[in-house]
Length: 544
Ligand SMILES: Cc1cc2nc3c(=O)[nH]c(=O)nc-3n(C[C@H](O)[C@H](O)[C@H](O)COP(=O)(O)OP(=O)(O)OC[C@H]3O[C@@H](n4cnc5c(N)ncnc54)[C@H](O)[C@@H]3O)c2cc1C
Ligand code: SF4
Image (cartoon, rainbow, N blue to C red; front, top):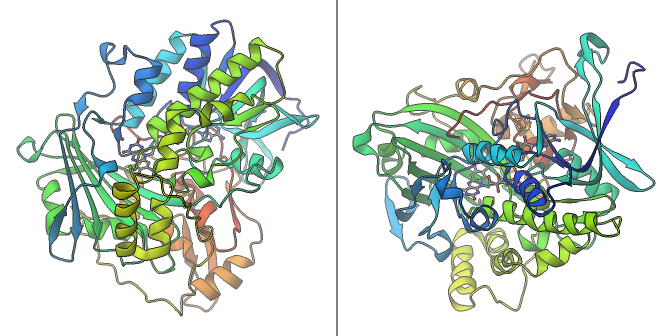
């Protein structure tokens, strides 16, 4: 909607979409290399870090390269990784297994990625980067087959699409090069991939959904630097899932559960799996006497090396999770996101200083020559191994691939299919009976969304669009009993009227925590997540 008002435009050398670790590392690197280049970063969260959700155990390799003095300047990471432990859970027992090599964290730090992003934002601004939080890039601008920037969404549009009393036209942010750093399943990236065929000849991207809670616990039970991972109960043997528990700071515990979105049982509820996992005797002891202070959820990329798309297109490139840079067996993407941002920045700085070619094409070569490429190539077979051989077969395959072959297997396993494919019908799968929450250790979705501080202006068009509204009942309900009502970690999707024989899908878009799962997992790809009005969404506090 435009109301006939032309958009104002601002010109930069470089525009970066997304103030996460990849976008901010890119912005900082460009200014380090070319101080006179103008760089603008646009961020949909109300402040830098508001939409960032991560474990997080962070490998400092890229940060050391980008800002070697980071430990001297009020560092955002102070808890050093101390103890690693890896458990296989049965319903009542926890069996300690050797920690897989990729999950050993000596030299890494535990903390909050949101805090890291806030700190990086300040460093970027000190170098002259202009950061605009509270503005969502809602479309990319294309002229003559080349991306020439982005436009931020109009503000103050009413639910019926008409301008409201506070209507404000979006801005055009025009640039020679635009870097898309939107994180996992970026909404503009999705369109760019389609428009420029960036996935041609590449395997499908696959994803996981991560749910996270931040707890404050009594100091007596706090073991600073403890890093625990579990697999097994309550999951079945075909579903790739596991939990993390990180003790950090004075008395924080970050708890999270990640499930591969290639799961096939439409009755599965990742949210409720995460809740019941906390009731396991080995896990619940971490929360004794504690208080949950925050909750959030976010998808993460799991496709690995073989799912990375073409990285450049005329006028720009993709960096970080939106391009698929995450090391799945390590469950770490921050160092990869930052390094990819830095490599893209080096290519862009070189292009700006030279003949300004349409594509900053040396980014792809720089990636192929980097430690990041070597690392991701070495880890490429582990996740598809679990998809192909199930949990135990996946473990055996991972051990052979890592310990015997050291990531140099002469084969590359492909992902069997995209995550939205392969879901069984509701009738063909076994329903799962989840226990009721107790409000102390386990919670319902509403109470959880409350502590994510999620807020959207209610009188705006829904940012969750159904390509064909009829399919919500004709396919999703009739065949799968509406799996979106279970996989959405924020209770956005509800079926009403089923008791009266007239089921209808109700979308409570204001609760959306921007995890992107519905955009990924809907069986017919009927749900399209587009950016809501800037500033809307979760407001994760420092610590998440
Ligand atoms: C539960 C969970 C646990 C994890 N644990 C770890 C861990 O322990 N260690 C680790 O290293 N990694 C971990 N990761 C992965 C890590 O969080 C990501 O790899 C990392 O955040 C990727 O950085 P990024 O900059 O690419 O994207 P993000 O951090 O997702 O940042 C993207 C930013 O872009 C903004 N944005 C998106 N679209 C737009 C738009 N159109 N307009 C404006 N702004 C936009 C977003 O609001 C966000 O601020 C975990 C991830 C999850 C979900
Ligand atoms: S509506 Fe979609 S993007 Fe929003 S929280 Fe639910 S699954 Fe995630």
